Amino acid sequence: MQTKLHYIYDPLCGWCYAAESLLETAIASGSGLYELELHAGGLFQRMHIPAGKRDMIRQSDARISQMTGQIFGDAYLKGLLDNPQTIFDSLPPIAAILAAEKLQKNHAPFMLKAIQHAHYRDGKHIVQADVLADIAEAIGLDRHEFAMSYEEVLSGPVQSHIDDTLRLMHHAGANGFPAFVLQKGDKLEKLDHTRYYGQPEMFRELIQNKFETPPA
Image (cartoon, rainbow, N blue to C red; front, side, top):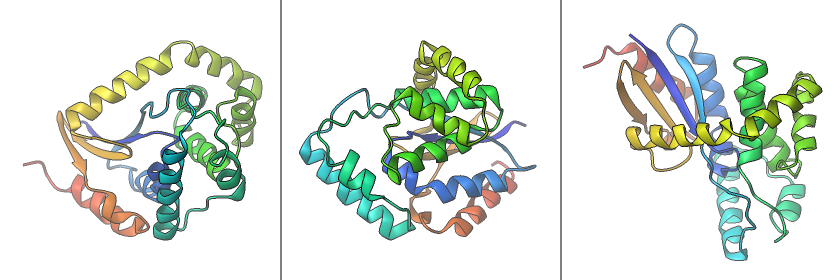
């Protein structure tokens, strides 16, 4: 029977950054239990964020930092987030993650983490191809190969991937990002991960119990 854990995310979602330790726990726990698959959704489509929304994001980021210890650097808080001209666009970083996975299987989580750190900690403009190439190179990918793969993915497959993610969210009853969805055969179950922010060991017990329990 096919067993998978689906992780549904967006690279520009603060709560997905909050779930970093949960994703790492899922990766570490997966050997022999399930296959982990990442699915990205397009939260932002090349837009400037209004002041009121930026204030809401800032409040949410402060809560995330308090709950999980995740770092939000000044270059992000006083640079990207404070600047009304900052462009937020999920497609370039998603394309970069898919390109990294295409070059090296299982590299998607590493690219996601590196992109999130570049954005939230270092205030990098992760909509820019050269910045994404820098990140890819930093995690050990060939810069030229990545650039070619990135352009190929961005020109078409990235939108198909997002469309597939939205269909999965619909079938699993996932209304936002992030979401962890357990699959046994053709049965999907969305896990209630929200209580485990900052508690990865308890999340480990949850997913291990879920996969070790025979289906009803």
